[in-house]
Image 1 (tube, helix red, strand yellow):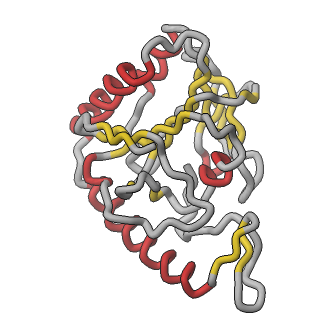
Image 2: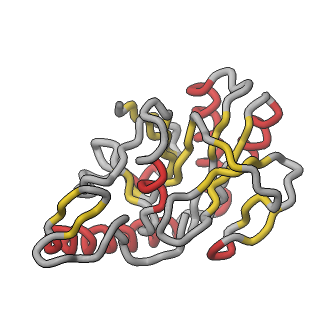
Length: 220
């Protein structure tokens, strides 16, 4: 979602012996250690992505698309947030078109201010696109909506459903402010599985994860 390389905690800077993050008190040394671990894992997983051919990425994206259709069923009238792929993320554009044609309202994340929650704006197959922050394409005609399903790209995912992302913290900031009954589905490559990301208080777990080999992890 973002091209920031360093893990950013969504809150204030270190103050004396603790760091306050969205109301959570976090030991700064613990956060530093976790950040170092996550950055190393992110680098490792990015490297694995580079070894995947374009054809294999298409196969993985198709497998995920099939599972998403099965999981969501009739999408008529549902508002579904997807994403525009960056950094080797799997491209779900064909599924977005299909879901739109089946009656879903598709939307894309838009960064309106750095280090703040994103907004989701309406997208359709004929939408004009513009360059957003970090040159990520976003709908040119902005129309904010609140999704009831969010499909989230992940770099890694642990056994509890916690997601390793690109490091900017945008999805966690955003998901924490959306309704509790929101369906959050993480998607990624089969090798994204990890034992743990050492979740912090602000990390938001996925409710389901669909991987490129077609496997579905039921988590919450």
